[in-house]
Every structure is written in structure tokens, then in C-alpha cells.
View 1 (spheres, rainbow, N blue to C red):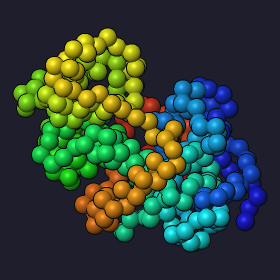
View 2 (view 1 turned 45 degrees about the vertical axis):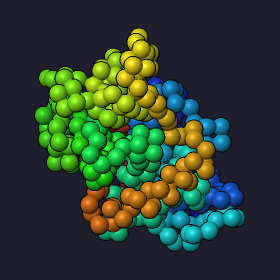
View 3 (view 1 turned 180 degrees about the horizontal axis):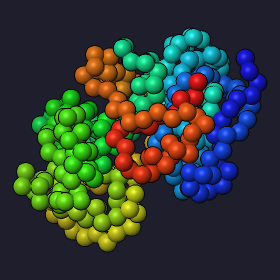
Amino acid sequence: MKQTMRAIEITEPGGPNVLRMTSRPVPEPGYGDVLIRVAYAGVNRPDALQRAGAYAPPPTASDLPGLEASGEIIAMGAGVSGWQVGDEVCALLPGGGYAEYAITPAAHCLPVPHGMDLKQAACLPETFFTVFSNVFTRGRLTAGERFLVHGGSSGIGTTAIQLAHAFGARVFTTAGSDEKCEACLALGAEHAINYRKDDFVPVLKDEGGAHLILDMVGGDYIPRNISALADDGRLVQIAFLQGPKVELNFAQMMMRRLTITGSTLRPQSDLAKARIASDLREAVWPMLGTGQIGPVMDSEFDLADVIAAHERMESSTHIGKIVLNVA
């Protein structure tokens, strides 16, 4: 096995041009870990936040960006069961996905769904872990409920639309163009609102309000989300693209019995992530294997073209997932 590997490092906080190809030692798997020869790595918003200096990795994680990847297990640490060297997997990573090799707890790996290739599989972990844990575990979405997800054409959005629709919810979404709205409708959304033209609040109010809202925008969306909720509704916050601070009248929360919650995935414990992986394998992976749901692919870039990949993501013109071809 090689002793060194190509990897993308963040030279300093900043824009996409601070990403640089470098050479690093191949990491060694510790207890409970597997070493993956990476084929493809997903590109996600948290990678851009880390690059900008706004999302530091946990102390024990790699400083390299990349929170999901697909590839082949080529070595295992002590204590690993359920996997063998040579297995093809997709995995949630603590970091380090923008490299030829990456390590992660074995319990954070999932098999490549039947009928999918490694490129498609690399698009699954980050968004599916995030959506399932926040929409169904934390948000308690059930069949027949009205569900609003903002940013419906993003990786998170396309995943949330498909999963919520598959589990019987009525799905509403927002997106920034008519083209994106059409893509959301094709995935199972009942109503896609072009936020550049229309306000989502009256649309949801006319329907009786949303039982659950998944938001990554924040800012002035927060009080508008509160207005768009039905009584006993839940708001789950997973990011703040427009900032985390806003003036809010919490009397509405008490009078209408609202729940406001949220989470980030990366800082959660290895055990918590392992539980999400187990839930996904039982409830979602069969649907991926039959093609009932699947990743929406936007574009592929070579590892050496990582700057262009980040520019594509930050342009917000993409629909679905962006991946790096590492192999």
C-alpha cells in the first residue's frame, strides 16, 4: 500500500482559491475504524464553511475537508465486525474525504445500494444522515403531515423531498428559479414556491400551516417560518445561510404550542452517528436499492479541479449533488 496520498488542504481561511493539492501520509485506522480507498467524495456546504474558517473540525478529526465518500475498504482496525477488506461502501466521515484515502468508524459505513455505482453512492451519507435524523427522528414527520423544506434543489432539499414523499407526507418547498421548482415537483413536491417571486408564508397558511419545517436559511426566515407553522408545528433548524440572530416573539411559541429545535451532524458522538446509520440501513436503504428514491446528481469534478467544484456550489446554480472524482 502507498505511504503517501494526494489530498486537498485548506491553506488559510478564505474563498475557493485557498484549496490546494498536497501530499499527506496515508492515515492508519484505529480501534473500530476502517481505511477506505476513496473513489468519489461529496462536496457539501459544511466543506465551504470549514474552508472559510467558520466550521472547525472536531479535535480528533482530520483537518482536510470532506464529510462523505465512497470507495473500497482496504484495511481495518481492531474491533471491527460486519465488514471485510474489499467491501465497497459509502461512509459518513469526520473529515478527510478530499483525499485518496480516508478513515472513519466502521459503524458509519453503509453498503453501496443495489444497482448504484460508487459515484451515486458518494452522494448519500451527508444528506441522508442529516435529513433522516432531523426530519424523522427529531422532527417526527408522519404520513399525511404538511412538510416544508427550504432550498429544495440543494442536496439536502432533493433528499428531503424524496424521503418525505416516500413516507407519505405532503411536501412543499422553496427554490430560487422556475427550473429548480420544476425539478422539485418531479421529485415529489406538491407545491414548489419560487422565493424570488412569491412568499411561502401565505401559501402554507392557505393549506392550514406546515406541521414541520426544515430550514437552513435562518435570518428573516425564522419569524416567517413561525408564521407558516400550524398549531403544534415543529421548526427544525440545520444551518444559517442568512445568519443565526433575529428578533422573535416567543409568545407565539407558547400560545400555539410550537417546537423549535435543530442540530448539526458533525459534532455528534460516534455512537449517535452509528445509530443514524443503523436507522438508515433499516428504513431507507431498501428504497434506494429498488430505485424508489435516489441521489440527484448535478456535476462531477476531478480532485484537482476542487476550486471549480466549490465555485459551482457557491454559485447556487446547481441542482442536487456535486462530487469529486478522486480515483
